[in-house]
Amino acid sequence: MKTRLKSKLSRTFANNFPDVYQKFTMRHTNNNEELPETTVTKPLTACTVALVSTAGVHLKSDPPFDVDNPAGDPTFRLVPGNTAETDLTVTHIYYDTKYAKTDPSIVFPITQLRELEAEGEIGAVAGANLGLNGGILDTELVERDAIPVVVELFRNENIDVALLVPG
Image 1 (cartoon, rainbow, N blue to C red):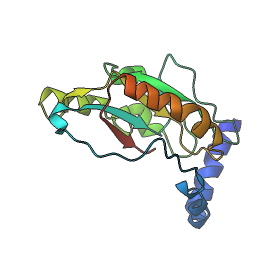
Image 2: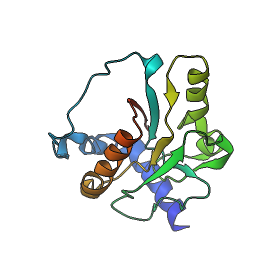
Image 3: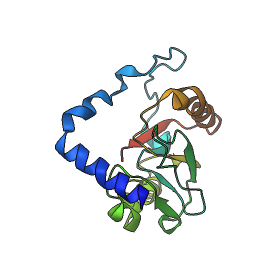
């Protein structure tokens, strides 16, 4: 009940006071010079592509994101590239997840990415894809703990491109 109430309140707040959400930009995050932006130097047909979604996507067998944490849940969930959509679910309170739970491809288009691989439009779907829970108000833990782990994971998996899908 507490989570449902928080979800309803947050959606009502967002709909009625959209200017308040201007503070939730990336301007407050630290500039990490060790992770500079880069340019893709090979064609997409030769790239390994990963999905990164902030829609709270995770495997049904994973623990759900902690939506009761007032600062947000800074953790991530790994989603293997061969995961069936029926094995996915969504845990989030800042948007209505009804449709995403019915059709996870709305927020995590893994099937469509595999189709692009089969058609030769991309080199491969990454074996490691990520689900995060957006709406993290305190980004310090994400920046300090999660992002370095994800960067190392993507490097080890030879991922060339990450497709970011907002929630």
